[in-house]
Image 1: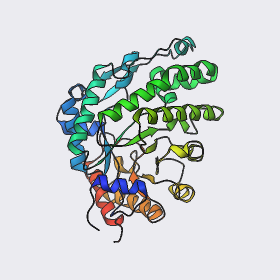
Image 2: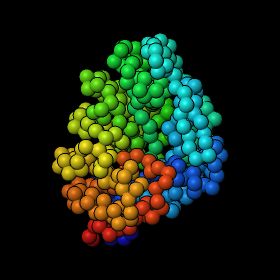
Image 3: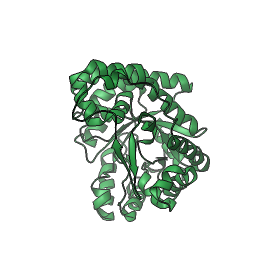
Amino acid sequence: MAEMTGLERALCYLRGEKLDKIPIWHQSGTIARTLSGVSMRQFAFDAEKLALGNIRYIEKYKPDISGVSTDMWWAFEPYGVEVEITERAIIPRKTLADRRRPDPRIYEELEYRDPFAGERAQVNLKACHIVSQEVGNKVFLRSGWYGPVANLALIVGVKELLRDVVFFPEAVFKAVERVMIDWTVDFIVGCCEAMKPNLTNICWAMTTFDRELLPREFNEEVAQLELEAFKRIREKLGRHLPVTTHICGPRPDLDFITGKLGEHIGELQFWWPGSDYPLEEAVSKFGDRFPIMAGIDQTQTILMGTPDEVEAMVKTSVEIAKDRCSFALGPGCDLGLGIPEENILALVEARDKYGVYKS
């Protein structure tokens, strides 16, 4: 079989078709920033530099699937969420809720604010368009975000929302229904539009369904809110895009997610190794229904291991899933700063050694 581009490889993987080798997904805003050659502040406010860093990352580390990565806070700045931008990082400093005094009025008074009203939002939209134009015909580009409940948590504070949903759940969920579903739909549609004509996937972070986060009695209500957002996004886009379950939590409730949201899912992506859901079990249970992406641990092996240990990790993952499902290699989340260059390069070398399909 002829060598495929990353885009061709990823599309065949998602369709469950024959391909030349197992695809790899990863991305990193912090590493892309170093490759841009500028400080984090310039990277965050300069669309050309932001795009350049992400393009250089794709060209250097050769993922088949990637995206435009900076940080998760820029879309929430119209709500007053404040960050500190240091030379190397973007750090959240202020969210809406008070840590010491739970107050339902925060949720009752929440109003819709345009996710693209901030300066950094416009920078990110422009960077998405540049990257799509430059490399969108070579790699599979993802865009996406969290669901409406998780977006509310990032606005008010994750710990605060987990507390408040127990104290006054009605106020929390009314705020999601009244404001955050529309906000989430508008945000994801806007990001998709920015990547025209090359956007191929919506990466939907479903860490809300980690078994250590929300109390399980709220799962049904959260799932219905997610489903409503899915429906509205597809109505606005006027087309179907594959939805990836981006699950970076250590205890992913894959059984609940696939049971409740399975009709909307185009790819099951989760963190293993690193989480308590074995890849072997996921392949056995879901491999006949979904393409599955896992197999790279971004918090241990890639960060602190050696290239030989990276190779062993890839080999183990491939041996579990290859030929048993449509499989791709991916980490639980973005790769962080400080990962040795040789470890990222070792991913492709190991894939080429163990993940090639026979003609």
